[in-house]
Length: 319
Image: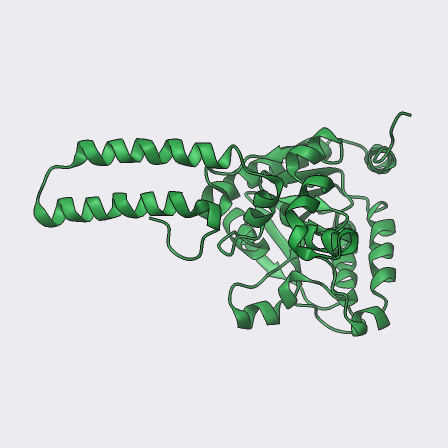
């Protein structure tokens, strides 16, 4: 049975899981054979789970991307790699705890990981600034990108942020300039770059580390110019209309695949990555290694040209 917080649309699943768990306990405690009844309820549970998760609205997928038990960047790094050495600081101002990165090995493949990190409890959320990076976070990321380029190590970026931090201090230290510089310079980095949106991918906060040769999304993640709440606040002056905004923004992995903005959707375990983080990590690891194997065979000039062309084509339409 699933423990911990859950989303409202998951309630029927949680309730049925509890009934199955109670029946198993009763069967053991009273020494009564209930395998047939348990199997029947398990079959009903599987059908209910499939029915709910195959008919999710865009807003429900946004909620799943923010699930409090969903794996974060450091979770994936721990599950997918070994010998991770975290690197700190931007060499200008500070070490932004919302942006993490460092060298690691995925099997025998050396990589440079970079990504936003959220927190679980209140203390950690504040420590990580809710995954919203300051300018020093983006400058740290760029420093790590250049370090990876120096040692000819491919880059893996795991994106999960509700946006770049919009505070006064961040603006004073050049938030927009830091993001713009990253976008420019990432297009020139002479090693393969694989991007994976593992949760939320909001606005320039995501794009500031989101320029790469392959862009992939987990099935229940989202990627958009603005959050549904922000869009609703602007268009309707009512953040409660976030579900309507999510439908209009077309921000799910299926939407972005159809629009040609991403290259691949990474399937999540049944009921989402939060219900089986290990399986989710296996799926992400497999896709990263396949992408790096393909990209590593391309000459640098071809890699950079294709990277630029990839982003030039975004937004093109026929009248």
